[in-house]
Image 1 (cartoon, rainbow, N blue to C red):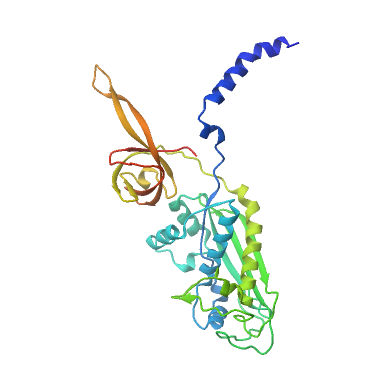
Image 2 (image 1 turned 180 degrees about the vertical axis):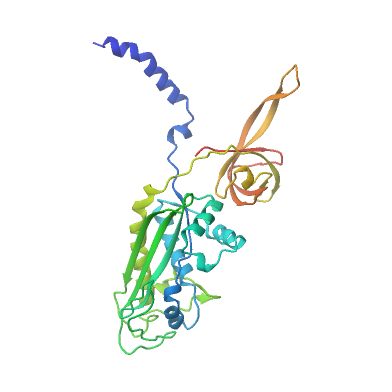
Length: 336
């Protein structure tokens, strides 16, 4: 027998169920947004002299390691990662120097401009053979003096150590620290030896993701260190506060040029790189018969676009869904 309390509550329960059923399927199934982060090139000032000696030239091993880490994080899928080109563009515009890579306050400023939830900064603390252990405090140990493909006095294993910090872009607070250490399973008289024939550096850049580099003993140690750092970092995703939309964005499409959609609103109106905006087309304006003032606009949805480049008064977007975007279509933010 159904109790009187249950009977009295049934209208409320029924109304609640109907309300849920009436929601769009996208709203019912919407998953929480992933934390959006940017990964800075790792600082390698403390091991640069040893890296230069190894490669016979200056190679940006900080970028090489950060690119490896980005690949790991994208494959894992816990975080949403800002494209490297977008980060580099903002850094260039802000005259952000290499010496500022590991500074939390500077990184937080860049993170706010990117519209990310957090920014990851890191340092390479060890990059050499097993008898060379370099820390942030400076030198020490016995460096074999390897040049490019050079021969040391005896077989040696390669060691790589890296640390990373997850920075709150609002407060510059360090929310989490992760580290990774790797040692090659093989020994060689050259850190660039051990089976590899790697020449993947040009213009100071390094392709650490290439199979040739990873077949060297220093490449093997680097990959191990990055994989361990990723495993240490991912469990800290819950510490990142996902920002919710607090600014109402209301703008217009100013131009459509191929795949680029240009808006008449930018950072001053609250638009950030990575923001997804809904595009709607006004089908009818309802006016107050007594004043002639527009009191409501009836719209139809055209699609969704995402901001890829933002300045103070405009934004460039690409299509996420939908087509046929036109100059004059309205854009508004989507609550995340």
